[in-house]
Length: 478
Ligand code: GDP
Image 1 (tube, rainbow, N blue to C red):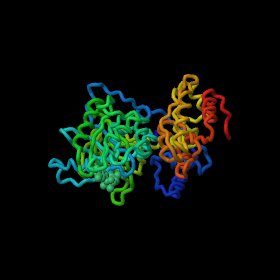
Image 2 (cartoon, rainbow, N blue to C red):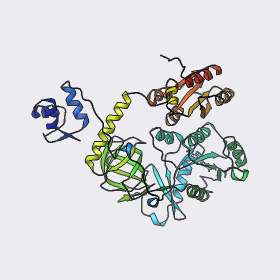
Image 3 (cartoon, protein in one colour):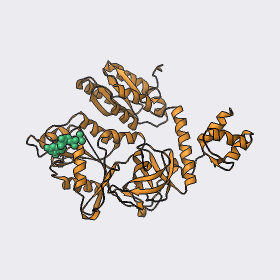
Image 4 (cartoon, helix red, strand yellow):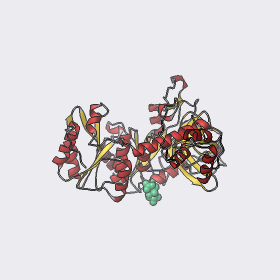
């Protein structure tokens, strides 16, 4: 329940007028019947030297407990949500721009294109949603926050270049997320383009073209000359059809925040992707730790909407604060409820920031194994040379203790980067640096995401450490 100024005063054995004075001193204009948020309660209690223990009741429809209990007959097809990833300069941005332009046809004329973090195009009367921020960093950052928004990944490779380090990263990030991959071989307009070479290189990453007996779709495109784009869109629809993406539009909306910012004129705005249900004007919601009521909704063509169904990206106003990218967004029956849940969420977050970390570390691996929580130890390897990375991979793959296996989700050459740490965080992995160290940006992220990073110079020591950890025999490191 909620607490008014009067309730709090009674609890603290103080005069309500005294509490009101304090609140005014703190910049909160209050009356005796006013409801207080948790911050205000903690502040006032703290001021009186009273410790407050916050009990968080499990609410039936808080974020954590909502079950997706849709009946099969309530589910309808929804557009697939697509992310474009690949190496820098291979044409991700150009491809996103060109695809968007394939679609400025009669129906939507008059609208002004708006950047809202994602857009929709239509082909063969079917819609496809594209996330507008290319690259695997954004993709995996969202995953690290628990948001899975992408259905299909397009890996772009320039046909005049080849598979580059970020191409490999993109492939591994997509695989770690379990998202189907379509390869777009780009820049085929260039005389140096060599599509077969790209296909050949891709087979090393288990992406084998259909004509070579595999099951990966390769599409040849020129993002710049706008060649092959329709074919690419049709292939996306094909993958979507196979996977049969569905959602129930007839319930309160759940979405994910793609971007959010403080707009000078509009106040806090959030660009969100609706995933379940239908979002309507006036809906009370929680986004991360913020709450609000949908005041206005605009789509990527600058149109005002009254409602938005599954896979629709919209920009909304009506928030009290600015949420974070990747924050879950959920509609509640009324604003009072939304506010209570937002309060609870921010307290929980504060508590978990102070409390134990939830990431797997070698030190607590054994207890997770014992409790049956872990079957694979996810590992990311960064090494100084390719040879060492391969040797480590080979040795780690042979470890099998207590039925737990090591699963290498990414390996590469070079310093440990922020992207490695975010992938580790999203996939609950540890990171091994072999003769390499984290770069400065990665250092900060390691502390924030609480990822276990181990540096070694001898392969035997890596193997030994992991085996000991699996047996629960690791000496604690202080
Ligand atoms: P990103 O870093 O992956 O987003 O790559 P960009 O979209 O910024 O493209 C990098 C460069 O490649 C730009 O100069 C583009 O004009 C060029 N480019 C992108 N696609 C093509 C293409 O299909 N053909 C050619 N010739 N150039 C392209």
